[in-house]
Image (cartoon, rainbow, N blue to C red; front, side, top):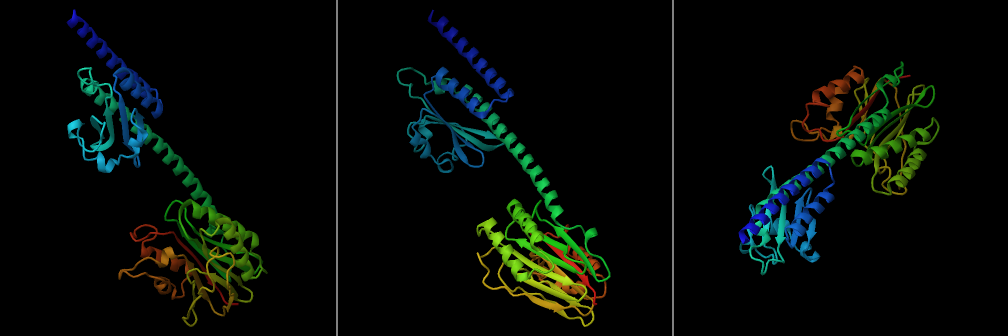
Length: 410
């Protein structure tokens, strides 16, 4: 009779395990959230198999405890997975476990040969009941644990892929929107006295570089090239705000010092001092040949006079925009263009590139390529081709923007 009851109990337990595995499988196929799967798992082990304590540490981006059933809360916080658990590459029992009182078995779970989780089990109901339920149902516990944890990892990976896809679409949209801030070369000035061209390459989908060319009157054109201290979405948002402010404020008669101060005030309000913008602001009057400018911490544009071969660097006269609540000192400079000249403005993604000698190219490549009578548009294209931009240069690590102009004499 006793054997008959034992056989019946074993049959009931076997059926229960099969039903439990089926229920878990159906729950996974039904896309139940990870929390619901863990609740089912804990109920099976603690309520049905009479396993007293169970704790699971799982790795996603870091190791974290995703289930604590029966262990004291302070026990969870006292475990360091890297130090206490990673040394166990297979299921181990009480006599082999070091420094974790109350843990009778540790079950590592691997996914693609990489440790995914560690299950800690303690059986508070073991005494006086013969064989521990942990030992009795070990194969089942290992099987159902592996199924549950791999399923939870797949849920995480799927959620992450959805998040990445959403982020990718947002970045693509942001890139298209930012591209619209950069003037089309076909719409740049190209009359007998002024020809402007530009090149823009963001290192990531979106970047912190910006240049603009604004027709302020029949003869006066405004220029700007700028670079945000940072990359990615935050830099792109700040630059879009800067572009809107610049276009609203830049007129044919506003003083460039006043313009710089106003842009500084707006930038500080937008960033609270966390970011700043280097900028070169200029205005060219093709009727008088006067080029006036303010350089706020930006790389010095290069001005080449084709008549005498002279090179002029339009150096910085003040700190970057947004660096201080008020810029301590700003100086506006003025040049009279008397001969056919070429102006090249650029960001540090170009000047910081390293040449064959391992040193930064600075303005060397610009000077070398524009020192001729050819149009500056052709010079820039030749230079970019030589430098392997945008493809073919492994040293390219930042946004690259160039705005260049042919300035013809009166």
